[in-house]
Image (cartoon, rainbow, N blue to C red; front, side):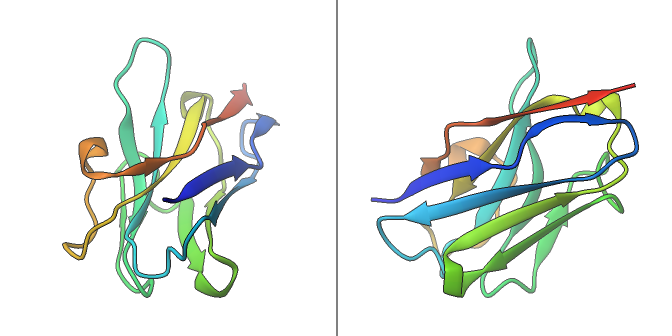
Length: 125
């Protein structure tokens, strides 16, 4: 079993940066594809960024491409989401997820087996 805990969210002004951290425990996630998702009120949960193992294949939603960077530190069992140039429309609850599969990354929430509790990010204009 894998437990995921996100941290690093909060309130930031538009244009500013935030870094989200996802710390895993219970077992190593070094071979698991990992993803960051977000869900705003009244909207479906959608993929923001995903990363395979050992970390050389990444995917980004068009809305965050060029502004967000996903990375992983397998030695620390941790995944990060560096968010730069934040916009009010990035306001959402951000979730970290792990996929217990050798099939590779996926942008579908249903393909992920373990989820963090969610971390609120608010971007003011």
